[in-house]
Length: 223
Ligand code: 0O2
Picture 1 (spheres, helix red, strand yellow):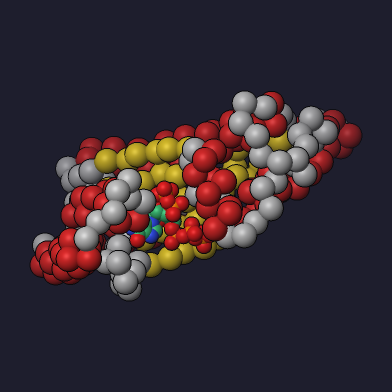
Picture 2: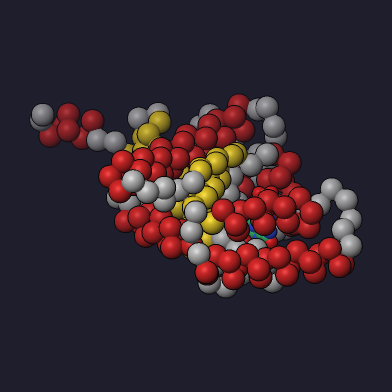
């Protein structure tokens, strides 16, 4: 291949923020609005990024099963944050409701949750993700070593993964939450009852949940 052609065939590596600013068909200064072309196109990028992460994690899951006869991952879930949830979070963070503010500040639009049997498995997965050649870890939150006051325990990684679309490679953010089966059971319950409740819950029930979180913490350390 000649120099000129080589240059032509080169794929651009670009951060999502920069890609969107330079993409004429997207109006990133606009207000977020469901069912518009801009919204659908941006969500498509997050959907692809989520799938990329899931596929990498499924490879680890199958590798451990096949080569070590061990289930290091129990299950993997993925979701795209709803527009209402994005807007509520942006209001809480006092952001302008534009696409630009959304992509720069909301890190969990694409979310992947990895459920592991044991605490040691959670840390094995974290180390494997850190070593993945095609993933950039940009932020980590260790709510396992230091659970939240609510009792919430989980490890969060914000990563950027390359997504190959429109002849470009765009780095898109994904939040990976990694936790044990016991932590996940507690978090799912608490999410409905306290974190995002549909109805009021009594103070005593709320204290009971904190005490359950402590019991789960001890259980995970014993196993
Ligand atoms: P939803 O409805 O679950 O999506 P950042 O901007 O990245 O620095 P962020 O995202 O504001 O930080 O906060 P954090 O602590 O990383 O929390 C991200 C997600 O973790 C939350 O998303 C929840 O899913 C989960 N989470 C955090 N704290 C708790 C908790 O106390 N209980 C439960 N059950 N889940 C929690 P959202 O958007 O808040 O909610």
